Length: 116
Length: 116
Image (cartoon, rainbow over the protein chains, first blue to last red):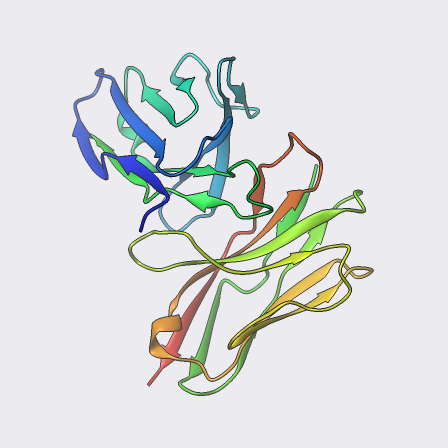
């Protein structure tokens, strides 16, 4: 079964509104989660590293005020796209490396965001 | 910063034949991990195979094997006895072995088509 759950799998929102995407680790605790963005026919680009109990670390060029990341518990990280615009439409996917799992990294199912 | 290069945007292979996907990377680190991920149309990221840089032996997982050339910074994936279900995007990825630096850096991907 799924190890990492992402919700919603698809969401459509209006320009100017905010939308929240959840990444939940089901069977383990995760102090660190990663958020990636994938444009159509392109690779995955790391947006930020989500750290439980502290501020996220954003990659260069990613607007931290636009892409709010909250990692309030050891099993849940959320990505909120604020004041969404059509150019924010993309596939967002999270990943987790559980503590003690060696090198295994688990991915969520991803979330399609369409801003209209 | 590390970079991962996949020079083959698209590849095709006849069913039951063998195909090799290329990947090169650049890093100044001596200890790291390399991965091949498969992304079918569902967009779910599926781990195909992984390699620890400190291991000289090439990793093998059933029909999938790698040719890891550390000095040349090359990490190719060989798929034997290709099956229709192997059709997907394949991403090569790099991860540092440093604790706390566990993000994945992906190549641009290779779209593999299986010809019946």
